Image (cartoon, rainbow, N blue to C red; front, side, top):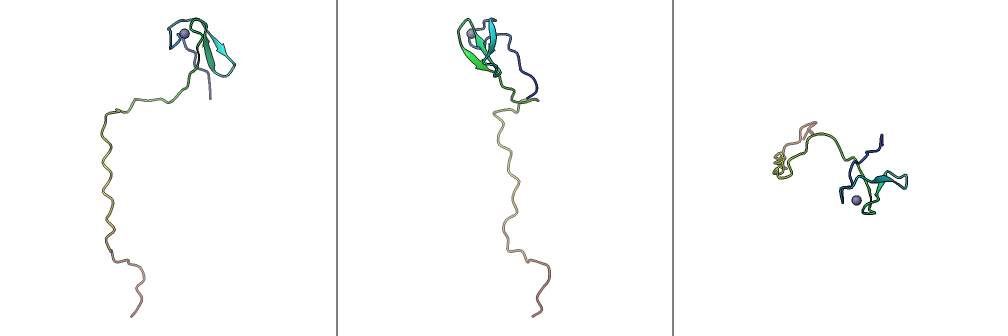
Length: 74
Ligand SMILES: [Zn+2]
């Protein structure tokens, strides 16, 4: 990981009285005594959660295609 994300507010109570917790990337809120950790999960636009699943490409049916290649002489 590159750098630690620094929260400005406690995500639980909104207080700003935060201190590093356990030197493990966690933060402790002195107001509500909760400890939490921030995690970076990605960059970029969100994909629409309600988007229908992409239609799967029609797979080629397992037709009994004549397998080319060398043909055994009869
Ligand atoms: Zn808090």
